[in-house]
Image (tube, rainbow, N blue to C red; front, top):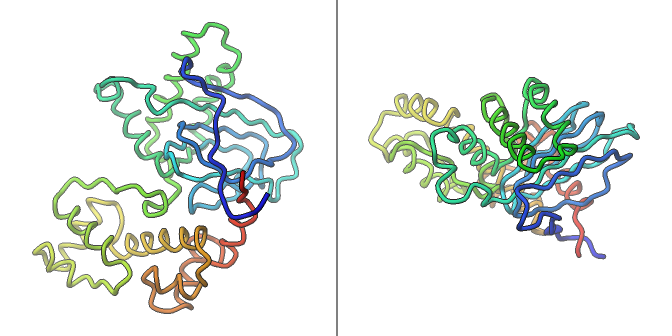
Length: 294
């Protein structure tokens, strides 16, 4: 085996199944960085110190972790890292992207689930309150003997989780290759301009002129519509492109800095470290350690 690629996993899920669930006790995490077309809900217990990688998000987890991933090409892995536990419980639920056939998912009763599945294209991590809410359902899912009731149980898990609006998205949009939803033509125009010009210097004045607003009004408008400041959005977009280049190319860190729109290497290193908790070189090394060819 040579390093440098990512496993495209073929899951055990069959076409006849609504979902596949694996409930297991393990002493360590050994599976490499991978992706798959199936949606995945992953619960981990007694695993403090494990490192979770979802796209360009790298975090060390506490004792409990619950993450939903619906991005077909969103690479992810859980690594042993600093975890000392030999009694880790993992419940993995995989389900097909076409589980909700026809327009069922478009019905108003499924609105919160639909929104959650869309957000999870970048990976979603749920708060402890959400974990406690669905734990009894998760705990019983693999032992439910009646197939129909297990599906009802599973849908209940998705619904309960969809009600928690404080769940966190993990990967950046540019790394996950998703488009941010925008509810106005002005915001869409701004997104398109930034996405096409992130490698250049972008000023608030030129963006304001683009959408015929004053700079102050635009700043308030963009924050209200997107939940982010313009500067933070631009930084996140550039970091997303930088992390993908670090993972997928052999370009030097200095080259990636300028290709991603940062003006100097020291500023790039400082921002990257503050947002990702790793330097660019450390981030690349972590990815190289988890990639594998099949």
